[in-house]
Amino acid sequence: MERIALEEHFRVPNMPEYSGSGQYFSDQTAVKRFDDLLADFDDLRLQAMGEAKVTRAILSHTIPGLGVTTDKKKAVGDATKINDFLAEKIARHPDRFGGFATLPMHSAPDAAKELERCVKQLGFQGAMINGHTHGHYLDEDQYAVFWERVADLSVPIYVHPTNAWQTPQHYQDHPELGEAIWGWAVETGTHILRLLFSGLFDRFPTLQIIAGHGGEGLPYFLWRFDSRFKVMSFGKTLKKLPSSYIRENVSITTAGLCSTPSLRCALGELGEDRVLFSVDYPYESSKVAGDWLDNADLAADVLRKVASGNAKRLLHLK
Image 1 (cartoon, rainbow, N blue to C red):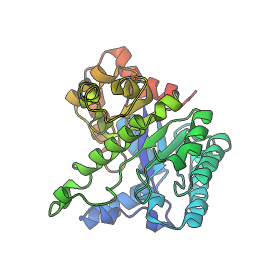
Image 2 (image 1 turned 45 degrees about the horizontal axis):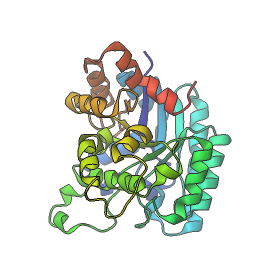
Image 3 (image 1 turned 90 degrees about the vertical axis):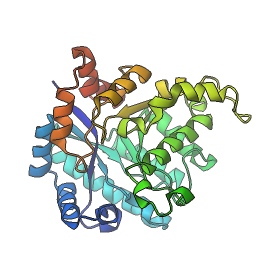
Image 4 (image 1 turned 45 degrees about the vertical axis):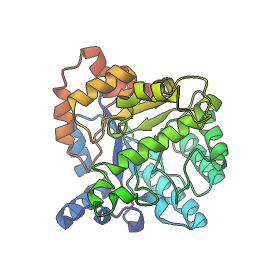
């Protein structure tokens, strides 16, 4: 059975400013291991894919990415370099790798232009964006030209976690809450809800967003989103209930959340066409993720969809 993974990261060795694992992990031995795995596109990566039975990995640049720079011109130039680097690596294993573009979200027109180049010339399947860009979120008016291009290209945008722009007061003295344990899910889920409540999906009904880590908590709250929006909309108007947009415009991956109860919740709330397998390589164990899916006890037709069928449809893979 084919198995496609969508949140599998890499780094460009001569651009260390965009891939500092050391800022997220205190164990320097682990940091060195992650850096080695991120930079490898051959033996180590293919071995890990084998352990998870992944037949194709859609590669994306690791965090923090281009968001660390405030220099728009540098971001635009470096995005091209990163994407060309990835295209070269994919060309060495075209049957095993695909790519999500790195985009300079400092400039919506430049991001739109680079996305089109990556899709039409490099053959990438979409893009991954690491949350806000210096406090600017993707629902802002400045990004309208970008979303127009995304809709025209009919490719998904994977919204990946980053730290909150300003550290919330309730995270003070608790840095463990601000990142992967909790804060990233809150930040990313909120970002996607901003897109929804801005009316983005009413303006562009075919747009497709991907959320990792089991959907960053969103599937669990669909009923409440609808219930409270009916009485606490604060003047917002939408053509449909909030849950409809999440079920029609958002797909989720299992990256970094190997939990069968969570998987069953997501399948129940979103439907079997909206859940996609992923690993979150190299930050999670490929073997653990692969073994977990093997034992998730899904019906054969649902397993095929989660393992690869939904990804092939969403990413227009042959």
